Image (cartoon, rainbow, N blue to C red; front, side, top):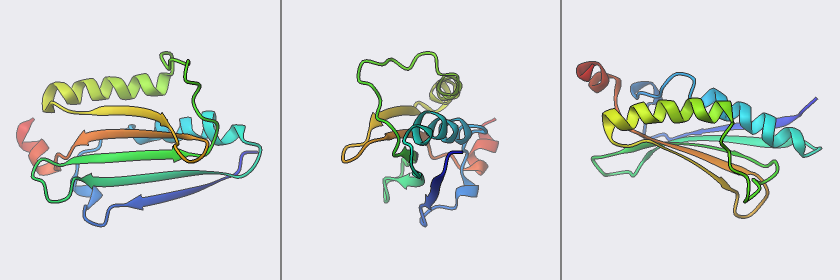
Length: 134
């Protein structure tokens, strides 16, 4: 059985319930961090979730969702094309970019240790604004 520590860090400057974060966007990233990350290290791993409103003080803000694990790093030659979870997120981001002009998914190896950072950047759309633009 896989054992890991899960930590959440929510930006105190934002009420996460006021912003639009598409359904099932976080679940596949957390599942990938477990399945492809911490299950392969042979010891207790860690998964960190950070959601923040960036940059502070600017009118055009984005929501940054970052999931970090300490499992194996990504092979530099590996193209992640057939990952079902990531393809679902890419489809969601395509729709978001069409409507709001921004939305990205980035995967990169951790700099100071093993593991992977998965970062999603979304336009900071409040639910009130979303309801008005439907």
